[in-house]
Length: 394
Image (cartoon, rainbow, N blue to C red; front, side, top):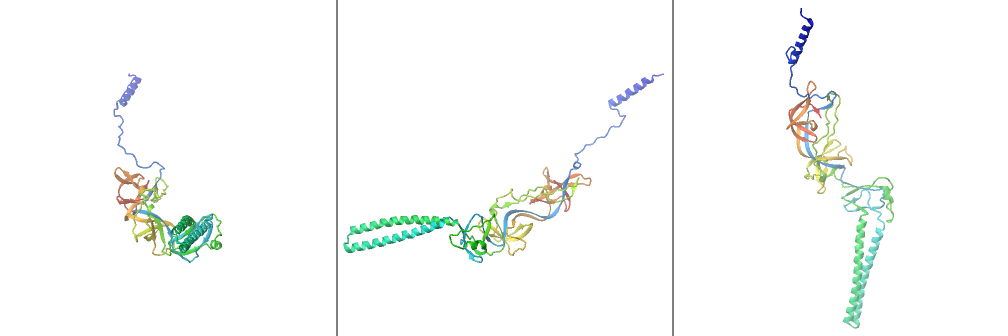
């Protein structure tokens, strides 16, 4: 009879050998090549947007400010005392007319003294010439001594020369004083009509010429306003115009979140750093749209000087107030009625443009697209997507 312990030992040894040598007592597990999943980690949230139809536009941006007409508002600091207001409401003025004189210390006294000295010197010169003529005439009648006559003329010529030199000094002083006083005179810069005068200040400044008047408040105060009666306009400088940047941060589209419930609220960046400080060329009379308060207004270009341009209305808008800020759009390139996405939804895969979409299983999958014009934070979609398709926004 065989020993059962030996049989059991042999059987166990055989099983160990089979496992060690890889014999196929158990079936071998099948293996496959795998690819990385594109599905986000559990809990990761990202926003969705949709392909939209509209316009994609690249344009130069001219920042401007609205006024009801061409207006000159004179506002003064509270510490500046007003000596005299020279105009009244409704009065017609021309560019260069003095509107306001502020207190200028003793400058008026200096001017008066110079004017007095000039008159005195001119009178003295005139008298010296007259006296010279009389003495020469008397000398001729008495002795007709040519030497004596010459001595008289030389004496008076010397006096007149000294007086003339003194006169020129006084005239130079007067010119300088008048220039200094101009710094204390506020003049009209446009032809027009006075539409506003601070009556309280005008009443208190209409007394004697030497009476100074100042107002006590914490902010600048409008004293006089002039209007040329022109049509309403926006005014800006083409020297500081900027080309709209094509870069964005985030996106303004979409509230549906794949893999979660959050949505991204984006901010579009236009103009400012990229392409700024480019002087642009606009044509007189050119039609141009101005954007203000998220609304576009049709205007025409009217140059005020080589760098300042007005965007003039041919009607009076009823929804704008003086001082409202906007920007004129000088279009460089434009695509009308095209499909587009926020630029932030476009990614690069090698030399291809792609977007990411969510498939039916919740996976994030790439879709190749053809991109056209990119401007104003938008990317034109030429092909690869249809209107309304949902796209993931980074």
